[in-house]
Length: 195
Image (cartoon, rainbow, N blue to C red; front, side):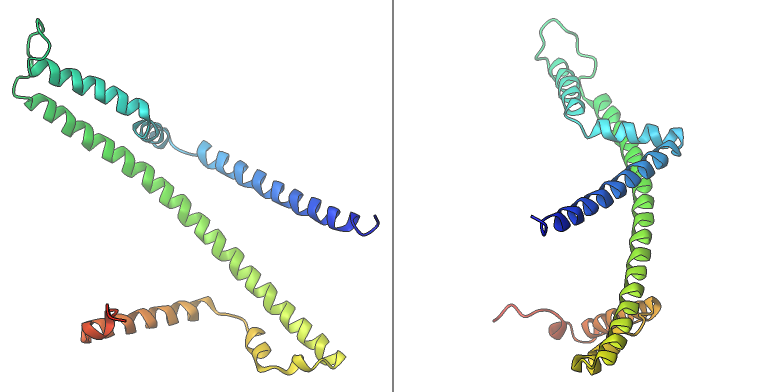
């Protein structure tokens, strides 16, 4: 069928774009992982291991044996920590180190997330700019062709560039307004439970 080759080629083109983007993201992730310091790589490995079932199994075995021996449940094995104070100290020290490793990994992941959010924002701003230009171009063509919808006031609004700093300022003002309302009248700001 002659009409079916065009949608097929468009679908193939979209798939190739998706594949290219996936490859670029994977390559970028590999570069980021290669640029990590040995400390970040070590913290990442430890964090991955602590989030595994193997880690839980080791702890069940070690702490289970510790408890069994020191509670006298293992006949013939002398108690080495009858008050379990040493176990508490070991567990506390382990918790301190694990939380530091987890925080290091989270800090690195947050930095990556911030960079990706910046990229997403830049792409969104570029897309907004392109859409605004397309609306302006289409509006001009519609006027030349005599299309009535070309004079709609909504198109004028859509054809204007959006200034991100003004949007952020509006968000801040709105948040301040809501916060001021909550502080001045908590009953009015809180959603009513009655309907």
